[in-house]
Image 1 (cartoon, rainbow over the protein chains, first blue to last red):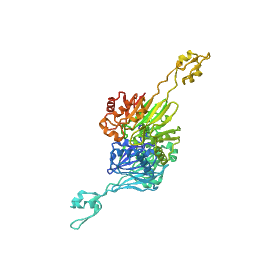
Image 2 (tube, rainbow over the protein chains, first blue to last red):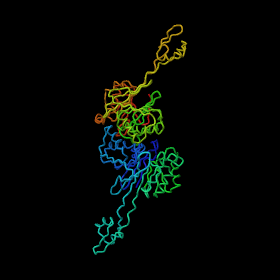
Image 3 (cartoon, each protein chain N blue to C red):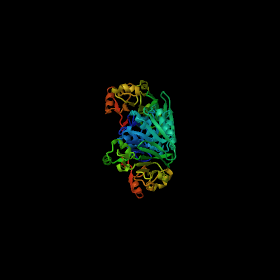
Image 4 (cartoon, rainbow over the protein chains, first blue to last red):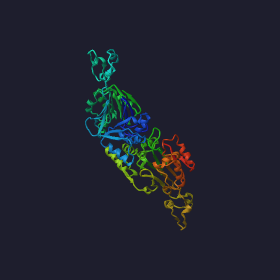
Length: 301
Length: 301
């Protein structure tokens, strides 16, 4: 998986910082997560091919997470896109977008689908043969979902030396990868575990922005490879975190620790702080594997 | 008057170019004209004080002219604005903005007014003691207005040497500036023209984007100090200008010439051209006083 941070600051776009948006690449699929104002420019700056994006996931309807969506949808039209695009987001997103397309008399020429979310428990919202995406209900000031991206378990890995040693024909390979045993011409059974090994463990990524400190999501994100968890504040402003529906770096690290995640990525910083390094320093006191999001930075995991 | 170009390209924001937005300063009033995506960042970059903007004029509901408006309105709230803000724009703009404020549960704390435009002839939409703003109906693919900003005639200029020579008391100055004669204690009448001179000629600015070549607006903008006229295309793409509701640089220059304007500023360039200098070169063949808009450039007139 490759995660590219297009923007990771809260509230408003500024001269050198962008509101939330990120691109997750999994097995040659590109998913856009949130789309603050300016996202289309950041996609260009990071040389991400617009046409490869087929699904956009919007966490909630605060402006710093979706004001760039209508512009991106319009630009896709101007670029003569023909591939379908699906927007997954809170109920209301369809009305916001279609009202603007209607009033500008600029309907898209490509198929544009909306899958509006209303569930308050986790639901699967996308699934194909390699990837599954589910919502992570978050506690914010308005209806808000994080997203859990999970690779599916791949086929078993063929031990090519072993299958050749047994003289097994290539015609059986597909079945062997699915876990089948092989019966040789002399009747000998070759058990699958002798000619394959376990596939790589599937990876997973959990995006959690914006949210209060909330332990109910721990079970859902338990053991993910990487967790992006918002840390709008430092502990010095802890009194603001609950009422505004946000978290401190310490709270993000506590969730990472209790959910036993592989790696924690912090973001959604308030612009009141002079250095984002302080977020990492604070989180490291609780949890040891901490990265900090920065606009234009990417993470491979 | 000082005109600051925040963005002057058509269609989409790109890494180094912005869609339409400009700030006009007249007699210490700041007017924002159009508001493409990214406008709030360009306001910051150009160090324009957000709080001084009290009126925003939106020409039409194509995205490159207003997708930055909802973000700017939201940012004003986050900056704890308390001054009223008035949006002048086509019918529909209020629904677009209020729907998004409603769904994000983020009503502004400052008074937000909408003056929706539907007239197809020129109407006065703002007026105070120093400035008048009227619409300029434009011919585009959807309902679209340009805007004519006119300084009002100032008071007459007092000839201070002369009034002192006549021994006129300061209490009369206000009346004299308004054009009144003065009767001295001995009954002598001092005619106003002996103690004042004409005020400076009022300046005016016409913003015309987006529009087909259209001579019906010439009467309205006749003799303006400066005209911003869109020139999306060069003559090499003249076949595109009418059907898309746009103009070429030659067509813009023809309007400037026929309206006898002081100065023509070109903008709203298609991004298909490698150099915007070509627009000036083309227009100069028709009209001699031509400037080209560029993001971050300002014009004093």
